Length: 359
Image (cartoon, rainbow, N blue to C red; front, side, top):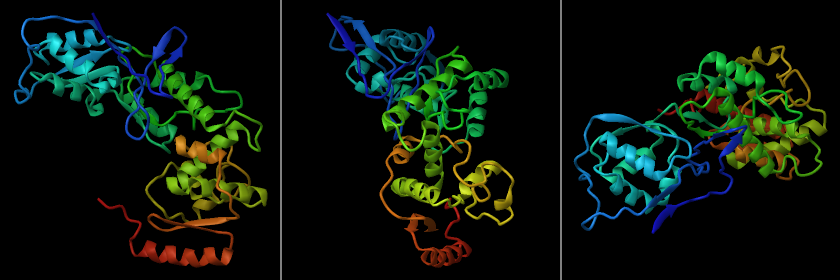
């Protein structure tokens, strides 16, 4: 008799690069990648169950458990038992094979406690905060914010720099800004920076294809759609993405400058302030949409799936202006007089401290 567990989730596949396979784990609002296959001949032992620690007997001592890409569940179970994490390999295997979440164990070095019951051992292996070297790319993050995470994960600056400079990009794409798809990535020990960067780009290509970037002839090229997606990501909340996408089209069609604060924030690499000074809008840069007409020359961040879809499918409307009057209160209009009235309201709320972060 053979026990086997295999779970496959849509859109989440191992990315094959040459002779290597880079496996990534995406959690939270993003989809999960199937990483581990549990397959093992049934182990028959006397008694009603496999030896297991009591769930209240966990030690405060921890140990690093290395999980390789594509490693069999039986091998993981054996590693846990040998390290003293679980009382027996059989106990962990039986829990894992009955729990579909086990297929989502990510490769990498997991810091787990000793003397765990099998159920808690599985929970700890699924806890991303226990994985050393986890790279967390959030929607709208700049490449300059991603790279330090790679250094912290153990990649050298020289290797990362070479990987960035040599990364294969889709035809028509000029740089990797916008192509490091937002997700939580966990790479197996020994994975190179080149394979890691390539896996992020491959994931972005998959998501762009899913959004419709390459399906038909459009008004904008795939590169331009990615630029629009990055602007949408930076300028509003998810509920407003499709409206912002339409505002961009409307302003471009009328020959109006976009005048997006987010492009200046990108130039200055500054976050955390909703206010933009007049001086800042005069910065001489091709990315400054206060001075330059049309789209900026490249994406201003790495947009997520919602922004990608909004770039392709805007909501119909004649809006030319929008402003966030207060947190979670963004308004759209085609009337400049209405916009200016809302701007007065925004400044009043700004002075009143409504945009201060709540800690």
